[in-house]
Amino acid sequence: MKSNVYFSRTITPEKVLELYRMTGRTLDGKVAVKIHSGEVGNQNFLKPDFWKPVIDHVGGTVVECNTAYEGSRSTTDRHMKTIHEHGWSKYFHVELLDAEGPDLELAIPDGRKIKKNFVGKSLADYDSMLVLSHFKGHPMGGYGGAIKQLSIGIASSMGKAYIHGAGDTTNFWGTDHDSFLESMADAASSVVDYLKGNIVYINVMKNMSVDCDCCAVAEDPCMADIGILASLDPIAIDQACLDLVYASDDPGRDHLLERIESKNGVHAIEAAAALGFGSREYELISVE
Image 1 (cartoon, rainbow, N blue to C red):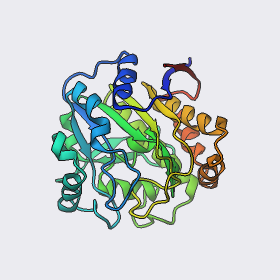
Image 2 (image 1 turned 90 degrees about the vertical axis):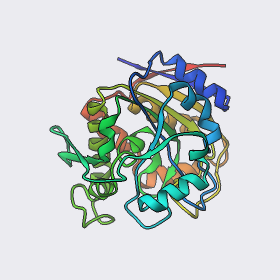
Image 3 (image 1 turned 120 degrees about the horizontal axis):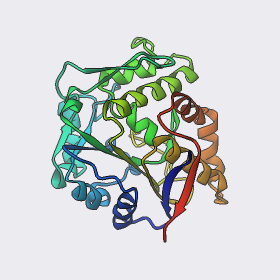
Image 4 (image 1 turned 90 degrees about the horizontal axis):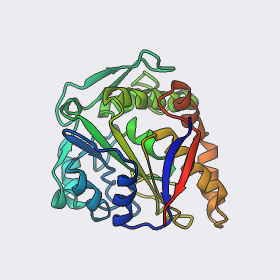
């Protein structure tokens, strides 16, 4: 069955909230709002004021996790300093899910590459989640969207290394690349299962660089902004974003596609669809 993906070419904070409402899902209980806090020096990440209307509407707590590599977000102290400097704590209550151990271990019985996922233990305090993703390129995944936010984004610092190494934390950068992408899909499935699908996904196709918001030194955006998408299906929303890039006639499109294709980015979507927690088939519902 096709999943609904709502789409607007108008990129405003108000349109984000409108598309969220169109999904028809009310996020109940304590709501986690997963954002990307942005590495210090990165010029492309989407700022707190852009996300404020939808975060205020759901009444959620902004959540993040520490990175597995050196940088401005690699420890709780550094990350909280970055969060403050980037303005997140000005508007919202913010929690690092893995600020304290031990990690919460999620089983992945049907995992293709990994059979468990390690996330910040504070995920257990939440009942539902709003996943806010900045769609753009990524140095390892090819692209970053909803699947990456569910997997690498929710994983603890150690959990990130576990996914990157396809179960071997000592092989962070050296694992077979498709195994890394399949591990991301495995990890994403565990978060969907844990929250029983009580998740809404929003992808914003703006400031689309070939580099991720985790890069302190990132290329400037290479193609024109495309729009905002919202869905209850993380696989459908990422597939729709890829399709919109391919359909674009923007002169910078090929540079972004070179990054995505060189890292076989679509394989994360293929692996996720094989696990069955979403569909690559979707109906794109355009909104003025």
